[in-house]
Image 1 (cartoon, rainbow, N blue to C red):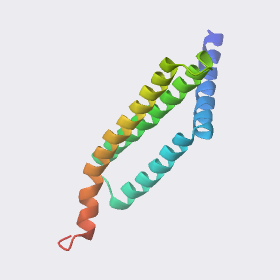
Image 2 (cartoon, one colour; image 1 turned 90 degrees about the vertical axis):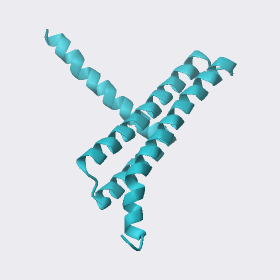
Image 3 (cartoon, rainbow, N blue to C red; image 1 turned 120 degrees about the vertical axis):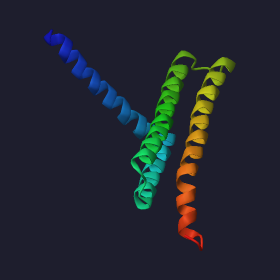
Image 4 (tube, rainbow, N blue to C red; image 1 turned 90 degrees about the horizontal axis):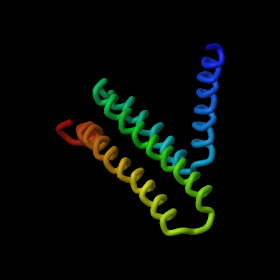
Length: 126
């Protein structure tokens, strides 16, 4: 039983190591992290409601998870197919496309939340 719990604790270590690798070695992850910081600052400045924060956090989480899965798939594809192969390229392209789709939909949610608040600040009637 003790070994079971030790193995579970170690698995968290592997997960944290993976998060570190992801943010250290993946340029797009760093860009997404910067976007998360900026969006969070904007949300704090605009005083988002709890519901709006939940939607923002869900979108941030989905985009960053999609990017992490894309990175993992790229690592595996490079391992399995170090030479150029059309199917390896398709796998990478589809995974990258999934991240882009996530960003597009997240941007839509962010626009619905942020644009009216920003418009109210700059409009003469605001």
